[in-house]
Structures are given as C-alpha cells and as structure tokens.
Image 1 (cartoon, rainbow, N blue to C red):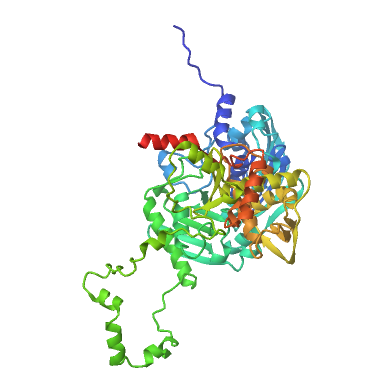
Image 2: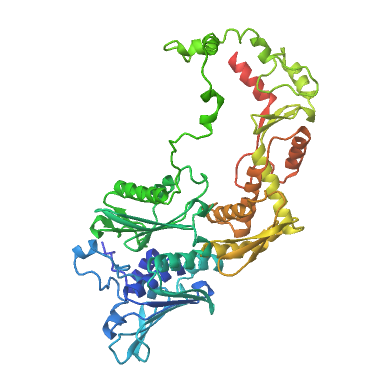
Length: 615
C-alpha cells in the first residue's frame, strides 16, 4: 500500500488559513489597522477603492520594520509578540497570531513599504500568491504603507461570495469604528474612493465617541467607572433618551480589544429595566481592563469572541457599574418616602373618624369579610350569583352578532341540517375572535384568519405594487426632523433611500451620519417617525439571516410587518369584509412574506369526524 499523506505547499496552507482569518475586505482591514496600532502609530490612514476589492491601503507613522523583519512578517506564525507559551497568556497587543499578513498575501497582490525611524532607506516588497516577486530599497517617510490589491483575485469562488459594495463598505466602517473607538489618542482617517468619510483628530474618549457616533450623543452620555481588584470598568453609557431600536451603538472592549458578548450585553440591558422600552437597546461604550491571564483571547480566529475565567463575576460588575452610573446621575427612578403635602390636606385625613362613621363601616360586607382571620380571599358572592343565567343570555338585538365566546346550543340533528345552517351564512356573519382571529363561515366549513398576518400580506402587496408602478403618497412634515445614526447605519440607509421614498418616506442625507425627515407615509403616527426608521434599519440588518435577500426585499418585508403590527385590528364589519376581500385577491393569501400561515381551514367533514370519534 502506497503512502498517501503529504505536506501541503505553503501557498495552499496560507490560503486555508486565509479562509479563517480573511473572510472579506473588512477582515483584512481589521488586521492591518491593528498592526498599525501595535507599531505605535499616532496617525493612521485607511484608503479603500471598490469596497476594498480593488484596493485596501493602510499608511501609518509607526516604528516601521527592518529589511529582515519586513520579509519575515509574511511567513506563517511569524510574530514579534510571543517567545514562549507563557507569553500567550499575557498578551496586551492587538495582533499576535502571526497569520494575518501571510493569509492576506495568499489571496491578494500585496505591496509593502516600511522604514524604521533611524534608517536612511526603507524596504519595498511585492508579493503575489505567497510568492515574493520583488524586494528592494526605497525612499519613504518613517512608518509603514501596506497596500492590498485585488483581494481574492486567485480564489474566484471566494470573491463571488462577497456582498454588494454597500454591504462591504458598511463592514469596513464597522471595523474602522471599533479600532478608532479603542484608541482615541491616535488620529484616524478613512478615505473611500478619494472621498474622506472620517477625519478623526487625537482627543479624549468622549470626543472620539461623539466624532464616530454623531453629535446627538454629546449630551446623552453618562460617564461610568468602577475599579475593583478583579476588573476595572470605565467608559460611557447613554441616557434612556439615547436608546434606539437598533443594536449599532453598543461597544464592549476587553483590554482595548473589541468583543461580542450577548451575555454582557444582557448585563447592561437589565440595568435599564423599566427605563427603556423592551424593544429598545441602550447605547454604551465600555472598556474592561482585566489581567490577561484571566482571559483567553485565543478561542476564535477573529479574536472577537473571548473566554473569561469567571464570566458571572464580570456580569455582576458590569451590571453594578451601569446601575451605579444611572443612579449617580439621577436617571434611575428612586423611591420617595416623603408624604405628599397635598395628601395631608385631604378631608379624610384632617376630619375625625366619628362613632357614627365607625358603626356604619363595621356593618359593611367587605369590612366583615376582611376582618375574619384567614378568610380575606373568600368573598361571598351568593347574592351576586342569583341571576347567573343572565350572564350567558344571548342578546336578541339584530344589530349585534351572537358572541363567539359562548356558542349557542341549538341542536343540529344531522349533517344535512348543519350544512344547511352553514349555507345560510353570508358575509354579515364574519366575526372577530379573541381580538386577533377572523371567523369566516363557508358552506363547507369555515376559515380562521390571523388578522395581523393578513394585514402584513396585504401591506406587502401594496408596497411591492408601489415600487413597481405608482409610489405611495407622502405626508409632508410641518417641522422637518433631523436625526443621526451610526456610521454603518448611515451607509445602509443611503442605499435604501430611493426605495423608501417610493414607499412614502422622504428622507434627505444631511452629511456624515445626519439625515432630515421631510415626509412620511400617512399611517405613521406623528412623533414616531424616527422610531419607525430605526425599526426598519434594525429589521433589515437582522431579519432573514438564514436566506439571501436583497435590501429591497428586506425593506418590503420590514415595512409590511411594521404596518401590520401598528394597525388596529378592532374593525367594524365593513372593514373586516374589505380586509378579507383584499386578502383573497392576493397572489399568495395563505402565507405572509416571512412564511407565517395566514389561513387555517376547517372543513365540515373534519368537524363531523371529530364528533363521530368522540361518540
């Protein structure tokens, strides 16, 4: 039997590693920015073209690399940060795996220019498909310039899986924001197709947060700080007024590394309980400084998921820090034990309780019941039950349909008689059950229709028609509102603005992350315009993650779902008839766009079968 196990060539091994580390242009941006930070740079400039597919370039004024180090940096597992196994558990730098540059060079055309501060000349290296094509001296300022061109040019299948330019730019902005947020003492600049998106000067933490998330946060941030022997927590949380329908403004950093943790997010959200609505998300930027030995940052290739030695104690400290900040700034509600002075002036307080009033009170039924030990819950209802049959009596008024909660007990002796009874039904017998289902009788049985789901299907069809032919009329705002969103949400909103305009939203980009609402659909309640837009953004970002939908389809489904859930289903008979008519005219009346069932049919045969089986 011949040997079949071989060692992979380096360029193939690097491409496999790149599949874990470099998933999209934003992944490469993250590694490049972190390397620049680790190099001690005070100014970092990120340039992108064609959403990073054509060019990703990071220029920094860091310490640069020698000629040998420049060449070694592209080898797998080459790092200056780890010498032995103990170093792996005391890491405080951003990058340390030694796979980033090797992975990038395996799937792109890379040009590196670097020069230490004390060197007369720099080093230029050109690499393609993990192969060094050129290495020579060059003239340049101190620091490093790393250009990544034509990402995934040699892995076309990976390139085909990239999303739209808008989505890829949004992901790049997210990574840029996270790194820039963690290092406010470093100046950052982001240029997209020769247009500056961000130009961030060095400053303090609050200045950096406001610069990245928008001026609207300037007056809505509360400083948070808690120093314990186990962990130090500092940063800013938003006031309840800063809460939004989207999750974009939530940042956790552990030892300056951005992490994702639903567990810690819950620790913050629970501190806001009763202060914000259940479907709102608080804004926060929190930094946790903890002994690296109590954290494992090596559990995921992107290093965005980490493992704590004791997760529960971290949860408790974060929750306590947020509650303390809210209380300290008089945001959390407090209990007032002082008696309202107006109460003390009431006649029941100031006037004496006379013997006549006492005697009259003691004769009361409730007084006697509640003063009998152990029988406070046994309130005698004998007098109230003497006319109990009246509670179930069906009204004989022809203008009111019989209650469906308590069906009449008219005997139906056979199926022919029952079927005949059903045939007598007309549309006037359509009824609402339990405030959410529509009963629609038929000659062969009846239909149960989920009213909210029906409204969603009808709204979706109306919106789809509006996009394809006639736009929905817009209700102009008497006082246009300005609002800010996160940088990534601004990119997303700009992409869907034309479609939103056809659906009744007139929104204009006002520069950076600011927008102006000039008009909205007529069915949106005044004062809830921004709320509605935030919900749309949240649903577009997080709905239908298991299937690929374009932004337009997500927008249609989101708006239909929103309209259905804000519409009243307490309708008069004529409105119920109209709703059912519109539903039956739909090309897909039985399911919502999200796949939820709308109609359940009960046939006469099935009903008879149930009764026969019971016999």
